[in-house]
View 1 (cartoon, rainbow, N blue to C red):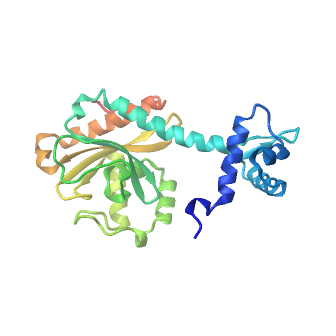
View 2 (cartoon, rainbow, N blue to C red):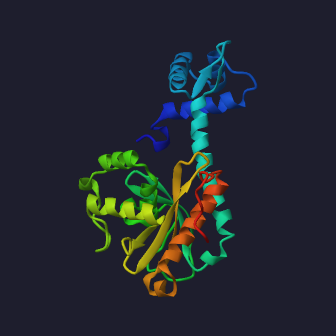
Length: 268
């Protein structure tokens, strides 16, 4: 039986080609690549043609090859996520009023949110958050906060792509079950400026969320602050929402976002 590493030889050759092209001081010709990588010329010509077609490589006027612009798109995506997490943690350091809460950063991916950063509090929540965890977006404060940041057209498109027939079963009795309830929740979030998970993810767990925007005003993430229901009476609910909003606005500012003229930030 062949080893798993040998199951996709074309992909492994493509990576070797990219590594070589990157290392060369001048764009190498197909013959150079075939010779240095010890591959048949016919194999190299076919591989290069596909890689040029896909934008992984570009052909120069001298018939040499250089890295393609599609790779820049991939690098930009990775860098953007990495920068987002860095800015989140650096911003969080200045929010001492959030030390008692578990604070999370999530991205919206289809029907789910994926947790890309997390600072757990010492308080026992009854549920644990970790980087890489995924949850249904409609049950989470950060997920609904990001949905609320969409314009009406984008939100309708999201609903078309994710109709109720594809929704997961609620995680608790409080989970959203219908489009009508979700639409009403989105309207409430837009009006008050933050989202609330009132024990939809886990019994006894509350979370307040708000959306993060980048320099262009595009929604890119959601931040959430979580606490056990037993601690909720110690705080004003609206104030917890404002804290989540203030954190989201601060992260957005670090990403280059500026509020439109005439808009005021929520007070901390």
